[in-house]
Image (cartoon, rainbow, N blue to C red; front, side, top):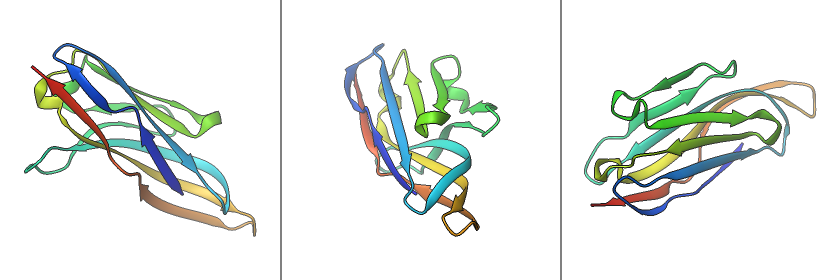
Length: 125
């Protein structure tokens, strides 16, 4: 599965951005996907920001609760991260991750966990 993330940019304190990440698969059809958004700031460890299971259950990093919303569009194999009330400490490269199960064209189940490239979010004060 190839993941394409986009939507990052430069915003001011209190601003908003909406990130998107779309999965494309050439070997068959996606069946289930659990989506994750991570972020990594310079000199810091990667941290899980938000997740949404195939059943729609969501989870958030404490510092983004009430400001960020993760959602999904299964028809488009896309996950979104709406980020409001942005703070300078939200500055990071945001990466999407998909933990998936797919049926290939030979009728076999395939599982995997793939990463997209990062999209940079910069929040200025």
